[in-house]
View (cartoon, rainbow, N blue to C red):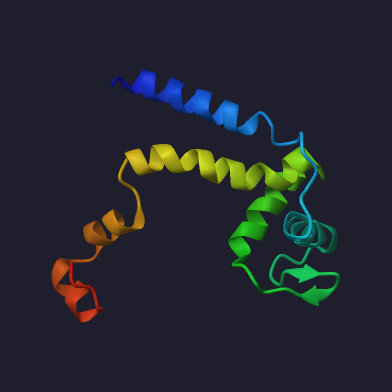
Length: 123
């Protein structure tokens, strides 16, 4: 397939996937919790320790919270803002998979096969 065709295909999939982000309210308790933590990060300015109602909440890696906080800042404190980062990562997964940029291939390209044996890999 041509690059332009693939680009248009993934653009159409992305638009279809993201078209309904703000139509349904956040589902409780999970979506509300994972939207509140980045909102508190933005309000307090503390992007190091995720907090939920003032208590440290270290259940997820902070990259998710940082991405959602960026989405909330760009779009606003709405359902679209709370779901925007997850949707963007989901849509980007297809083209990245097509480019063979998943961790297994990167690992084989960066780390020599001899070193993998010593690191516990049998590939």
